[in-house]
Image 1 (spheres, rainbow, N blue to C red):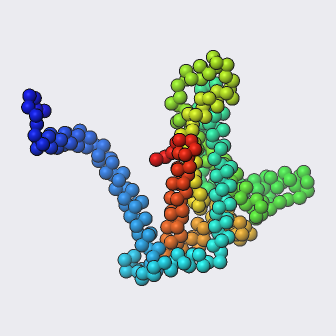
Image 2 (image 1 turned 90 degrees about the vertical axis):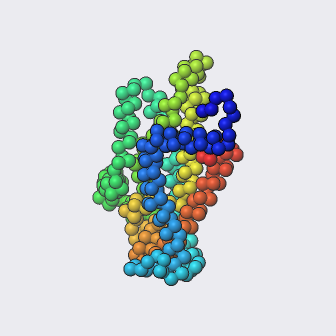
Length: 317
């Protein structure tokens, strides 16, 4: 620092370089951690996107190289829209995705409010732990539980047989397929989805609830006046992300649940890519579908964010 004189431009640049050098030395551990994270995303996220984009314009074969594969231009994209099953696949994907969004978005909000309003802190922690547990079960385990309840000789069918003398084949029913998917998704992920909402509510000043009580606000009024406004930013974030994933169903779940009897309602874009892209080794077609899904998802995220900012004044960016 210069005292009594006005530093020249060169002196200011030198001072700025010294300050940057001191900061780099002071925060070098943090920079190292940041470099590791950046390297991870570059190697496992961005580079695969670039390679996938190139493959979508090529006729890539096993044993060859991406750069050496034949360039076919838009042929892979044209083949996708010429496939006679594509309309059915898009319809099934949207039906399942919209059902998930409609029936799985609100339960975590209601569950968070119910647990947050519990008086006993010990019982509140116990309740949170219990609702988190299903998230850690794999879909294989979840499918086993669903099968034990809804198969031909499962608990539900045995109960129906005892009451009515009839059985229903839920696992091979086209009408029951989507409800089974959505129901098992709700049971598995609702508790885990409350974490973000609990994080938002921990920052609420308890004096706001006390003030609301003094003003005569009941439990419902306190939820409307304090709890919901505190959760609104997280709700907005979750909704925007859900809109961006509208074409991305849980592939592992559907692969386990669906069978030849429910292909008409259970076959989606991801399972088609699995059969065609990997089963028939048409990697260019599979990559083209992924690129199309990415573009559509980006458009939906931007649209949802713009709409949210216009209507609520809140958005992700």
